[in-house]
Structures are given as C-alpha cells and as structure tokens.
Length: 134
Image (cartoon, helix red, strand yellow):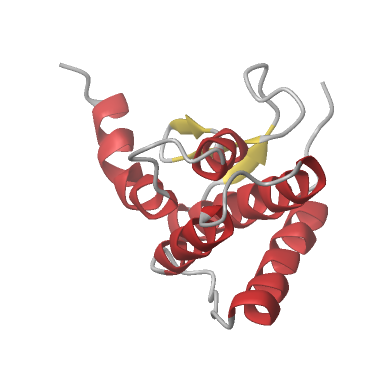
C-alpha cells in the first residue's frame, strides 16, 4: 500500500480552492464552514445532471483532498493509507478513520442526504463515541 504524500494532497486541495473561486466565485478558507460552501458547489455541479467521467474524476480528487485537509486542520489529524480507501487515502483524527474521497464520490453521485459539511461537523461526536462505546 502506498503511503500518502501530505504535501501533494495539500497541493491538490489547493487546486480545489483555486477552481471553486474561478468557476463558482466562492471562497474556500480551509475552515469547517467552508465545507458548506463546497456542498453548494457540488449541488451546482450536479444541477444539469451527472458529471461526465473526466470531470467527475477531477472534482472527486480535489473535493476529497480539500475535505480531508479541512478535517486534518480542524482536528489535528493525518493522512493515512487504508485498505478500504482503494485508489485514495483516508484521514485519521480524534481516534476515527474517515474516507473523504469516498464521501466526495457519494456527494458527486447525487446520493441524498450526503454532506461534506455534516461530515466535518460530526467528527467530534464520532470520535467521542469511538473512545467511549456504550
């Protein structure tokens, strides 16, 4: 399994910031709140129907990297390799392993009730539950 390159993933996440500003006029500031802005971008991307393959691949990559980087910055996490993250990487923070690229894929496929912002906000509660199972 390939080890993640945090610098490369940060650069990819930075491409998301640049592309969202250029194409949608929205500012992403690396905060948890910016994930709500990115949810709106995803809704705009899907407004005219499913994304074609190349466009889907691009947005999946940059949205997954940006979402992961926001969680890492907010909760002191790291990028990790994980067998469930085939073709991508996972994030470890607060004792939780999360899959931002899988979430990006689900959001970009139009799966109902999937939200990047909810993912980011729920992290502390999921971490607490993992540390203190019932």
